[in-house]
Length: 202
Image (cartoon, rainbow, N blue to C red; front, side):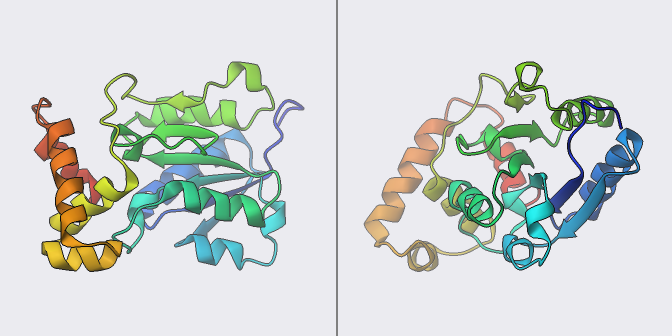
């Protein structure tokens, strides 16, 4: 690790073992001194006694068991518990919605070689070279709201409209409003119905 590299401890919040192994492998190639910690949830991370030593968090909110998606609230919780930590959303979620509170976004569909390259940049204290979004989706974001993404996850898990209304704590009319808005945004995208399956199988 040269003097430009400052990250010493990285946390992964992701339930996918392949993702965890890939991140650990890449970090080991950067430096054997980088410690990589695995967590299944944000709650596990914020309860970790040595959490204040973590410099960077790779996080995929889609791997949560909850139907409700609220990445901005999740990121706030992490940052409230770990001062100065940087958050990288490592997901395909930014294809569907904007996550403004994340420091960085990396698309899970990038090749391992590209992921290696971008992770090296994230581990260097050189913000001028580090763009915020390393994504295969630059200009084609669907721009759904967190409610619309949560709604789609509910339908993909075969919940009915009333179940979804209960989970979102709103009335049926509001659910229909979210659904119509979602379909309107997706209707001109040929792969929309195929792509939304990734919201539960990222």
